Image (tube, rainbow, N blue to C red):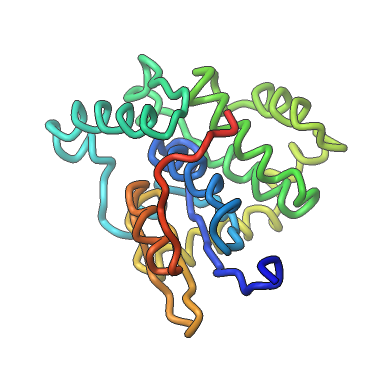
Length: 224
C-alpha cells in the first residue's frame, strides 16, 4: 500500500559550482527513503539566473558575507555528515571559471543514459567539493564518466555542445527564472492540489517535509 502512495513532485534546480547545492543534493536525496517524493534533477546555469534576477554571489556582493558563507557551509556539511572542503582557490574559480559544461554534461547524461544521471551529478559534486579537483575540462569529464560506468563517454562529451543539450539546460534555467529563482539551489515542490511551493537554499528541508505531511528526522546517512 505504501509503495502505491502518490509521490510529491520535487524539482531540484542546482549548479555544481554552488556549495549549498551540494548540501541539498545529498540531504534531500537521502530523504527519498522516508518521504513520498519523486525528485527531478534540473541542472541550471547559476550565472544566467543571477544575471536575470539582478543578483550577485553573496561573497562578492557583500564582503562580510564571504567569511560567514564559508563557516555556514562547513557547519551544514558537518551536520549532514558530508565530507566537504572548500578549495583554497574557490573565490578565484568562481570569478574566472565556468561550470556550465559540467552542468550540461549532466543534461547530456539525462538524455542519453538517464539511469546514470544522478551518479554523474554526485561524482561531479564530489570531485569538486570533496576531492577538490577540477570539473571544467574534457579530461575531468572523462574521469567522471568512466568512474560512473557510462556506455559511451566520448559521445556524451560531444553532446555537451549539441543543440539538444544546450536546449535542455536553457529550459531548466528559464523555468527556474520564471518561477522566481535568484540563486542556487532552488527547489519546487508540487502539492497534491497542484500548488507549487518554492524554496531557496539548503536549509528548508524541514519545511519541505512539513508541507508533504512528513517528519524531518535530521541528517540521514550520506552516500559519500
